[in-house]
Amino acid sequence: MSSRVTKFEETFWKRHSNPKSGWSRTILLPAILYAIYHRNWKVAIAAVIFTVSNPLLFDPPEDNDAWMTRVVLAERWWKDEGRGFVGLSYPNVLTVANIPITIYAIVAAYRKKPVQSACAGGVSMLLKFWYVAELVREYEAESG
Image 1 (cartoon, rainbow, N blue to C red):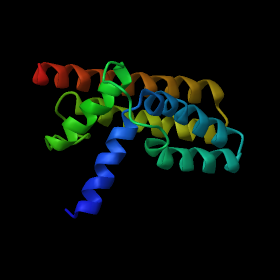
Image 2 (image 1 turned 120 degrees about the vertical axis):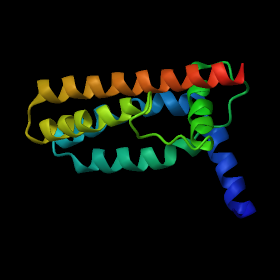
Image 3 (image 1 turned 180 degrees about the vertical axis):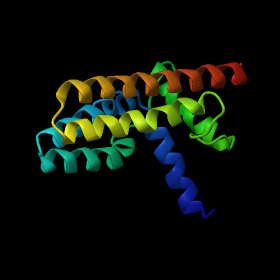
């Protein structure tokens, strides 16, 4: 890997580990479901742009005490260990389970079924939080 790519990746992870980055991303699925339900493509485009740019918007955190900072550190560690994010082993199976639920939430929003969309969106978010909490537990157990 070139030094430019390595430097960008290091900057990406450091800035993304700011808890403001992680917590602000939690609004993305609700924003996308809202945009689809209301056919508001400006909100959808803004959500996509925010998704892409978010990891670079914030300064690196001063310390690693915040739970959301540890989430990002755990995600990076998990990736660097080559464990992937999708698979049938635990906790990756939570992501596998989350895929059809998120698709259902999107389809329900498109079909203008607000209760189904909101419920599926909520379950999707719960699965994501469960998944990253498991990554943090694994990371902290490994790093002692």
